[in-house]
Length: 350
Image: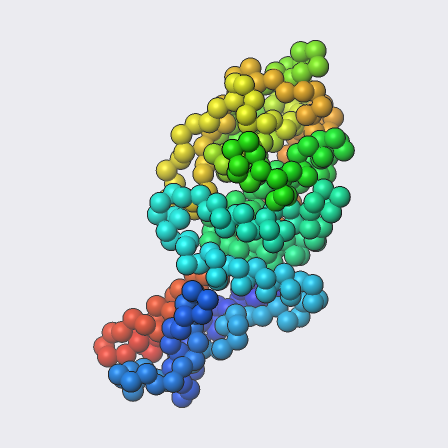
């Protein structure tokens, strides 16, 4: 509710720009390589009619988190500063080039954001869901692609292992994935989540991917579609049918290392946006994994998928709020800079 109220407040303030007259104009000033709206003095050739618009000069312009406990305020300030200094100046370039933001994701890990809810026993930051929501909003405000990379890794990859995995599985597939270790190619370890399939969408109860027992191993065959982080991930959560007669109760969840023989990737999808995050198919042909890579018990895959997606909606909501916040900032900036009929369009009737 606080986030909803904050969004309503932002919209109300944006709509009330016309009534904010008689104060110094708002100019664009560079701070830490990011353009922000700040009150300024008359700058020489500025027409007089451009000097009568004012925007609140708080650090966030529209809302603050002053009502939150100090720990959450620290998370907010840290993430906001990182987004403005590291993400906003580069987000457009990354998106245009379909370029994975490697350095930015490395820095997220250094800040403890690539294991934000995990236990400190597994190198996590052990913060709560509110901290995660705040972090997701601010990171996504800086770059939607970095936001979805962080969200998929925390909500969809780390969570099911943390909530349902054995201690051995957590040690092998959480501890090295919270920002402290790299894969065989020197890349930061991140994960992905393989639920959707070409013919089934995200219907977890209709998985055509199969997993069959063979001695001390599982043999997995199938294809997962539209998988976020696919080309940068080192391991994947994969849902597969282990007992077709049981329907949705015959689906199990596994951790599959992506360097396993028989594991390959499809081409990167050419998306309309959020293009710095790769999306493609996971293709498994007789991929063998140890029996210990099963998450939870056989047949618990559907329950694990549903619970994981429930928690993942917190991250998605934070992404949406961050993108909306950035959109308002851009709209206000444009309304103050774009002139028509001799004045900024913010002064014209909408």
